[in-house]
Length: 215
Image (cartoon, rainbow, N blue to C red; front, side, top):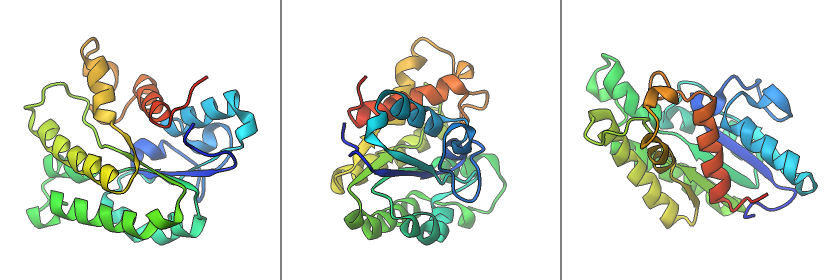
């Protein structure tokens, strides 16, 4: 597996990562890590390779955009000195352009998203053993849907950054698309954004596959 033994794996993002994790720092077994993909990943690692002693830390915050992430980066990432860092951000950056009446100047467009995310990566990558970038997603198979089309643009930027900074890429949109050939989006998330347990299992499986986890 790509994640080294005795590593601290810090996972940061928005509500998809948060999932009710404890404050201020979530690092423990069970529901302290929330009820989503972070907990599932930790459960798999702990149950099958306990000798690796991988410490999983959840620093997700519901509602976050990449702009919010930048504000708390020093305290929630740099100060915690992770060995491995996983970032899943961008869903709110896109969603807020569709579900609110905010003036357009408050939107986080693709340029701000990519520039901010790259700045965070640049300042942190030299201090990490490994970086995982997870694409934002929309659980909608119709690629002409306006929000799906916009999300795909942000996901493409994440894929580009993963290549440029030698990061492990977790293409979450592809992971969902693979099952949406058989399942209706409502089977995975009522609002097509916040996954249920099945959806979180898809995220966890995609992450573990990307880091070459086997059991």
